[in-house]
Length: 181
Image 1 (cartoon, rainbow, N blue to C red):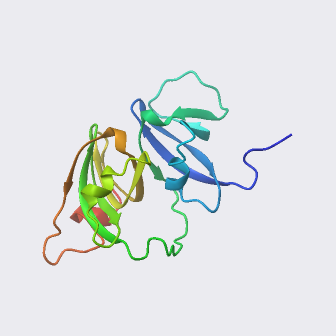
Image 2 (cartoon, helix red, strand yellow; image 1 turned 180 degrees about the vertical axis):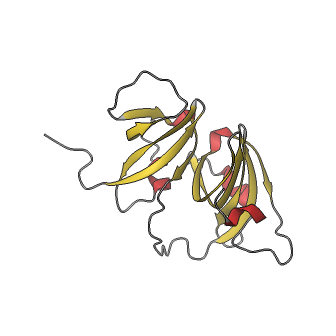
């Protein structure tokens, strides 16, 4: 029998959907970033294994759960993978932005190619998810931080470039982004 998850690694994630959060594991090829896996446009669903939700009262059992990508607000890795140098992105510039997604305000860095602008980067609609790094997330449950967030472009209501204050830590978009909430 064919095992479609053979050769894949488990990545613990929290997927915030329009119905609430779901925690579980994605089975991802080791050669792909989580963002790349989410952006496979041929798949309309993301499959979560070993899932649980503190707030969603769906009547599903313990098997794998397929979630329609159009209902996903954003995805965060619960255990960040080891940093790997990726020559494809080494020349990119980190641009601080603020994004509104439903009841969430998200501040983080959008990575743009040399001479690029974050607002233009958001216009590239060939991929449903965009990556933000060094994120401060403010929502109904308070504030939290994440090294990475994959945000579904379809749920972004507004975006604004953020100017870093003079003398500010270039690794933090806001003063709250450097400590766990």
